[in-house]
Length: 441
Image (cartoon, rainbow, N blue to C red; front, side, top):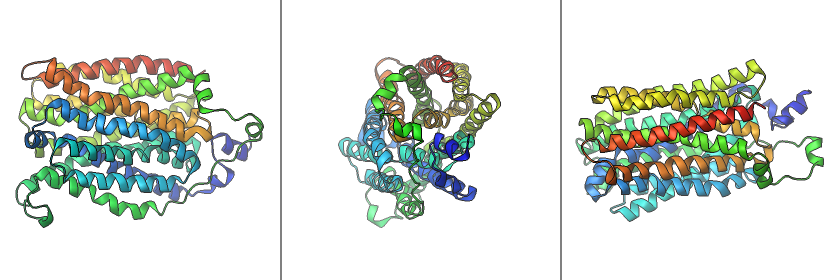
């Protein structure tokens, strides 16, 4: 295969192969930072569940709605038209405007004084953040070499775990400071609660990042190979219908596994606080460090493993890496039932995060390989829709409902979390094992 035809088959034009390694690394790093910022703004709410609940008198179900339905459903739904936009319009400017919207909406959460306003601002965060993933995947696929695609996208996705960690570390430190010595440090926020001030300060750095996004050069669209140019244009619905089993096992299976990680990050702070008396600052420090170290290590290992296995076998082994992540997570989740103190529970949560995070970058990378170049934005958006509709839209509120109405006693939240995550992980293991077989044909 010639260099030019090989580049086209991988969805890159010949001109796109001239990007220097340094430029590719810097762009991937910048997009990873943007992803980290988005997760800071997304998961700050999880850390602040308890003070918000006390201030606004909210139930666990309503907290789950704020973190799940308000954010997840709108994030997922808006991502679909944005995916089509990514296929035809500037990916750089898509990210720019998305970043502006979610940063301003996060800051506006600091001025919410009831459930309705906080719900509306969380919807704004979801709408803005929906732009980043499909546009980021498309840019990275256009500039990164195929042999390192899973690794490059995993580095991009590492920002999501690092960002969640920063949400807890920075959020916990800011909340503690604003509750004490820094209570009067922001004059225009006098009279606001510490959790409200925390939202304002966490959203502000995103505005600064806008200037760096403008430094990205918009990649050229991939040239079509002659055979593709002569063939009738295949619609996205026809493509999905022709590959239904392949995509459904990947999308739903990985969504179930990512849902496990989302559930842990969303409810671990409240669970450690209620069941074992950990303070907001202690939870923020420990969960934050875990998300900055253990979880990103899992993401990177998953991407490197998928690339290594694929090179070694000469086949698509992304499904192998995904199914390994699911089967490794399942017994660890069962261990949650045997935790006798906060330290044991935290150690098990960290192990689950490492194992389940191995799928975070491999799933999106698999789509870039499977989907035709002209459909990657929309297929990525459909993947993001599925993952977030299940992981964020359904997960947090389901755990809240189980805690409020099904399980009783001192450990109702723990029982709810274990029931939900084991069910989702078992489904993920079966579906991703099926995807492994289908993708290797």
